[in-house]
Image 1 (tube, rainbow over the protein chains, first blue to last red):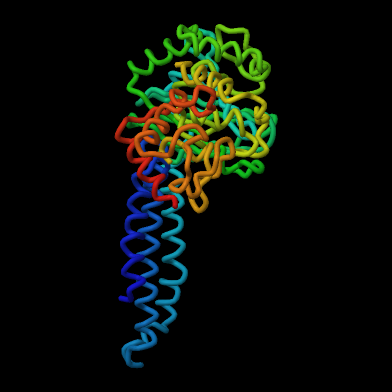
Image 2: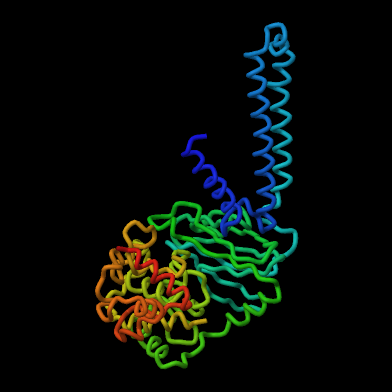
Length: 329
Length: 82
């Protein structure tokens, strides 16, 4: 083994391991559909590997064995059995197995306990929970669901084709203009799973991510009722100044903060933005610093998104607005 | 990286650190003043990365959600940028 490969092998092994444990991997299924898909994947991968090894072995044998020993490999019977019957039987069995196992992917026998509308927009995700008692709750870039219950997603797009993909929970489904695609997902384990737009949708396609947070059902009910409350009114003077500046700068023309005069509908709802995992649809961790960075330079951080860079604010103004947004929990 | 300093600050060669809101941190260890306000000394830097507004009331850099120890680690890293 050369020095170089000695260095590469452990890092490759580490890469393979992190691939399984990371927040976004089809190899670490945590949902009903993802488990079925992973199982089919492993059967094909291992089965294909075995057949490949068998073919290589037979090829070597046919080339290296003495002529009288390898004569059987040239018989009509062997060619028909190995070249015709074996692939037809194997592929038919694989087709039936695959159809049976994945036939229910994206669907659930039980009625969904929750319906959520998810709309892809360049380059973020609009989320609307259809609350069981009527009414709706708007949010963005993060989808919270109860564990162990089927949740029906209605996928739409506001502009071009996007594709909704949370590899740990389910397969992907496109969001097609003028169409509502229904898709049921069910998480088996509580956790936070990263999702990603899986259909090229424009310049910031790669930065169009989101998170799905699966809670135990009782925690989810609490979460839902808390999130339906309007934003808390600021108590601290500095946060109140931030709120005033947010309104004066015109942020409310595009953004909604429920319970305030900000009722815009062009950009993401910010009512509880302080609780989200990320800023900029999965780009940055969420804190006053990254919020300030986003406000001041969103066209630098994510060129082509619809929000202008607010680079006219002074340092104190910028900080006040970011602190206000961070306080919206 | 976990706090997202790179959203505002650029460090050449570090992926994800290409912000333009604050100054580039290239050669930070050799800089005389932090934020153009206080002397570039370790104690001041640890304080600055955690609560910049306490040292410079007009700065755009917000107080960051990190512990004292994390601030020391970040300061130690910044002093490697020579």
